[in-house]
Image (tube, rainbow, N blue to C red):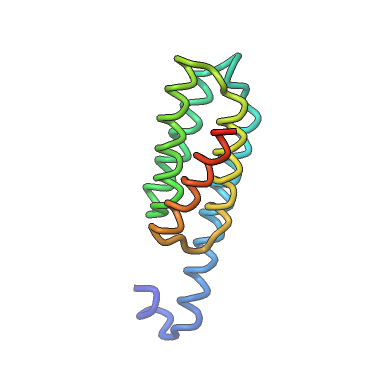
Amino acid sequence: MIVILLGHWGIAMELDHDRQMLIRAELSDLLEALRLTTFDSSPLQFLVRLETIRQTAIAHNITAVAEIASVFEASMQRVIEFGGADSVIKSFTSILDDAIGCSHLSPSMTQSLLASIAVRLQH
């Protein structure tokens, strides 16, 4: 509809780029809020903020970020049982930051990012 109203692909592409930048800025802000939340003192707030990242990514069709956040949530459930929050949080927030910064992540790239977390957490 924007293309019809504006009648120019360049402007429509620029608007889409601007929209994507705003979404990525919103996700970056949500990630920063998550980083500022201490899991040990407020696990519920931490998990709610993580869920907000996942839901925001889903709402804007940023599948890679949503998938990484989902795996992060599952990993945090294991942390509740077995401990080790610091290394899990550090690894996942780093990967989420990378994913948010990318303009496009294919499913194979997303899987590579998730595999890198598995390698980090083994050490």
